[in-house]
Length: 103
Image (cartoon, rainbow, N blue to C red; front, side, top):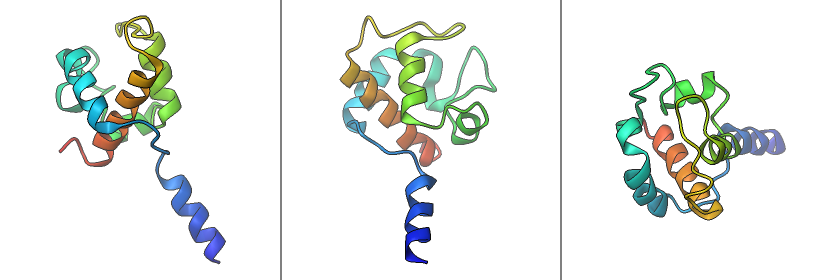
């Protein structure tokens, strides 16, 4: 019974590996123009809010890191501008903000 409870808690939220405080600074410098407050000024329904991330299978560190690294649609790729650690920090920040409702 305890093992089931631990597994449930383990999978309820994506693992955080980066530094959210550093990610916040990187996000502000590179992402806020389109994603202020977790919104998306280009494609409003594809915001960084938890519900949208879950709906579009983006509610994971790996999915966000891939999106930031490679870009997609109107979003530019940041793989050439940011280090892998910076991208991990941004992804960690985005997930932590999504979990808190961007408050």
